[in-house]
Amino acid sequence: MNPAPNLILIGPMGAGKTCIGRRLAERFTLDFVDADQAIVDAAGASIPTIFEHSGEAGFRQHERQVLQQLLAGQGQLISTGGGAVLDAGNREAIAQRGFVVYLRVSVPAQLERLARDRGRPLLQRPDREQVLHEMAGVRDPLYQGLADLTLDTDLYTPSEATAQLVLRLASQWQRLEPSA
Image (cartoon, rainbow, N blue to C red; front, side):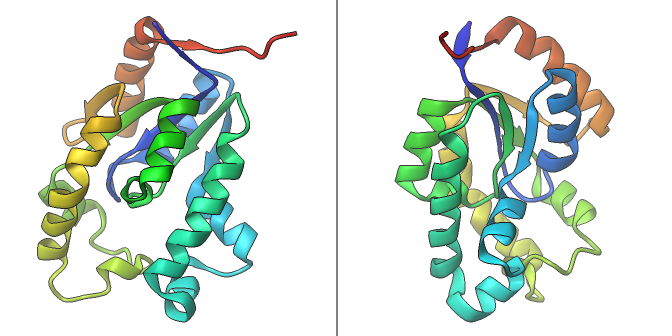
């Protein structure tokens, strides 16, 4: 058993962090928090707008601040953005404050799942497949190094992935309750 105050989902875009995260949060009676939505709420601007005005570096600064605030809490399922692991401070905070589940997905599955998505600034290029391969090359080792548990989501529907995770989490994660 690995006790932690929060359950944290990491992985690339299109892995199912939000969809599966909502289901898991309900199952474990955790507050669901989408870190990207929390960034939008805190900044008062959409992610594409933040990228347009502040670049990726500006977005990552917002992300770092929001994650620090979120990770101070407990009893949450936090769905992180795909690039949250790029920052060493984020990785350290995630590891300290959560049981980390890496939702792994292949590039072909990402392309299929994100085919109609136009809201992700890093994919607003004609060479989407190459971009996803490059991101995976950099990020996959970071995801693997941080993960307490890994699930490949390629072959599962969100319901099936959730069921798999419920079984595995029941034997591997203990929710750390606040001391009285």
